[in-house]
Length: 279
Image (tube, rainbow, N blue to C red):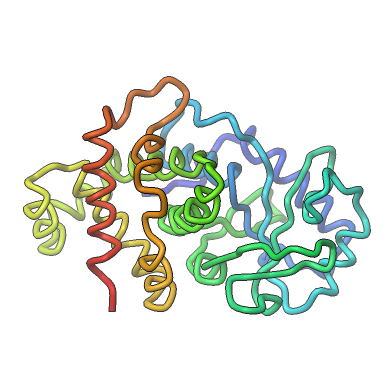
């Protein structure tokens, strides 16, 4: 489904420059503890799945840092000038970069309060996403981690529930993009047509491949994040349902998936996938 070896170097160059500078300043931070998330992750996955049309305009760099203590984060933050007043955004290699710590520094699970800011940050399911992540080769000597498609979707589901409370809609467009990836994936279609479980879902969705793919996406996310995170997600899902339907569409002039009724159908199918594997 995903071929990261085919990702254009132009998409990796900025991440490589940023991570190289981070490593130069804090060599004790292992590259395998760095995970690219956010827009850079989206664009790498988009290319790795064989798509070339432009995604939405956001081109920020977000790095998840799996940390056992705050020591490395404080040292790292001390090396770079702040960009803005969030307490986690720094100018690194000429780019604004959000540093998102997670792991043992979470307290409670899914929440961190970096020493550089007074407010907490949600890193919900980052540990589960990290555990299921893949290696991303930035050069012959530098590899970090990148979420898989289901991992990226999980992060976006959590972000939607958090940010839609404030009227932000960009995560809905990213969720629509993941649903499109699944609908267009030959690997996903093989699962639907060549396995008993896939055929069962396909029949339940009246042989509608796009709806079935959205339902499978929901099921894959839930399997990846586990029962506790699944329960936490379902308790909040879908947030502002009307806003989600209005915003569930690709940007950059793409017409997929169609009008409001079609968007609702795909969201309903996604919801069936999320609910169906609850334990």
